[in-house]
Image (cartoon, rainbow, N blue to C red; front, side, top):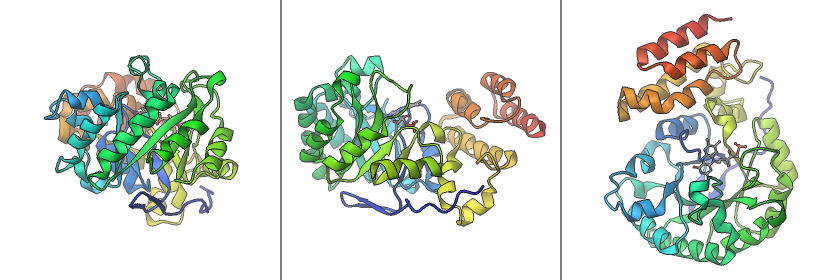
Length: 345
Ligand SMILES: Cc1cc2nc3c(=O)[nH]c(=O)nc-3n(C[C@H](O)[C@H](O)[C@H](O)COP(=O)(O)O)c2cc1C
């Protein structure tokens, strides 16, 4: 790899949390489980975020019987933010109290509010990206959340999109409101809700938000290498870089930002920006084994399928191996398929 050491990496302070660096793994439902997050941390991500969890779901489940699996964090992955979604200030207040009074969950670094999810079942409740269509409700949610977290000495951050659609871009207005009501940092995913995940991220909107607020800002959308991160930061002035899809099945992307580090040297990046297959398999099995030890073989294999196949990205004949991995039911089967993949030139 010829990625030079980038000059965009630096420590970042959010509220009273000092982050080692300004790289973050984006929250991704079904992808950013706690084992994967801890791997990304080890490989260089300065901050990770859980997938979105319903604030109302926590209100109805105060013992966290159903939601714990999605909220669980590992102390060694810290700093980690726990992400909540919802539409009612009272739900956030109760959920934040429940989370922050829990002996393990209360060790999280930050609470993050999801104000960007485009999924119908979330926006139908007025949550996710729908919340930011209503600036007053957005303000109430932020204020209630910040106050609830402050009682535990914690800060609250928020992740937004640029707007609902091209005719209602309002990220500058929303970011100003969020800052006023106590957000310790803001992430802008530079797409509208209508775009979902398609089209190009509009980094120009990140720049507009940067000019409008004083708290740290993470730029998000279409960063897939140190070079694209540098371009995003140069165009926007963003303080932090949040990486989503490019990290799926590719936790090593974070190590590429530290090309002089010991871990990067060990990874021996190839011209495609990936470690050799053998190394990829070792890390992938580590991820799988970590999940197996938590949820058992059957559930781990089933739930990790979409991630397992991402680990094969960009390799010759990947499609046929991916297909077989989707059908695998045991760790032994997964390992045997990966062994064949290793032999494939
Ligand atoms: C499979 C998937 C699940 C996601 N889940 C969440 C989520 O739980 N919370 C959230 O704020 N964003 C979620 N996102 C959005 C990402 O955090 C990120 O904003 C988006 O993918 C754009 O960044 P990227 O271009 O680096 O992928 C998800 C994205 C994907 C692809």
